[in-house]
Amino acid sequence: MSGDPAIGEILVPADALTARVAELATEVSRDYAGRDLLLIGVLKGAMFFLSDLMRRLDVPAQVDFMAVASYGSATRSSGVVRILKDLDAPIEGRDVLIVEDIVDSGLTLQYLLRNLAGRNPASLEVCALLIKPERRKVDLRTRYVGFEIPDRFVIGYGLDHGERYRNLPYVAALRE
Ligand code: 5GP
Image 1 (tube, rainbow, N blue to C red):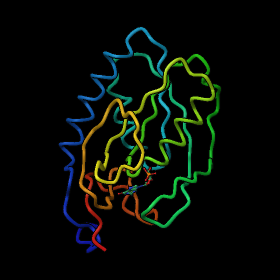
Image 2 (image 1 turned 60 degrees about the vertical axis):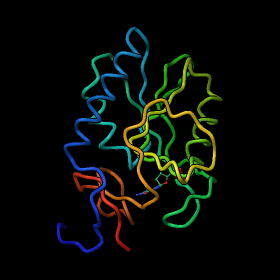
Image 3 (image 1 turned 135 degrees about the vertical axis):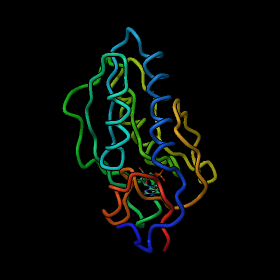
Image 4 (image 1 turned 90 degrees about the vertical axis):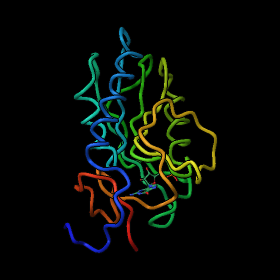
């Protein structure tokens, strides 16, 4: 796969991912000490981020998953979201932390936040590995952010293009 012409500039190298995930895990561990932390991983893009983050947490934590699909083109979401896989268990009274790969327009996350807030968690926060501030359409609170990136379509470390490139160990721009 290295040498694939679709893999463009590396925006976040592997060692930077490792270091930043460790910092986020320290922050989350401090903030959730003595609470009832439930990580909700948003499939599939957040899979590496979630597992790397969770294994570095120093507080008890449980995990559940959701899979959502956003209608729209391959690279632009519409904000109309379909739940492909819902949580296994209720979240009422839990301290929920949504673990997202990337917040682009914010429309997918806005939908998720509204949906999960309706299930009465004790608290609801977001940990996003990547955000694209230039593209944000809705005002959302992302409590933990890994990296701010420019308006480029990115692949790697869980993020795909047509289901490919998730296994790259770094985040790169897609060269189209
Ligand atoms: P939003 O609704 O915030 O515009 O888009 C969120 C979803 O679109 C993300 O969870 C992700 O699945 C997808 N997405 C947005 N930007 C990118 C990107 O640069 N690369 C990849 N692979 N997916 C993206």
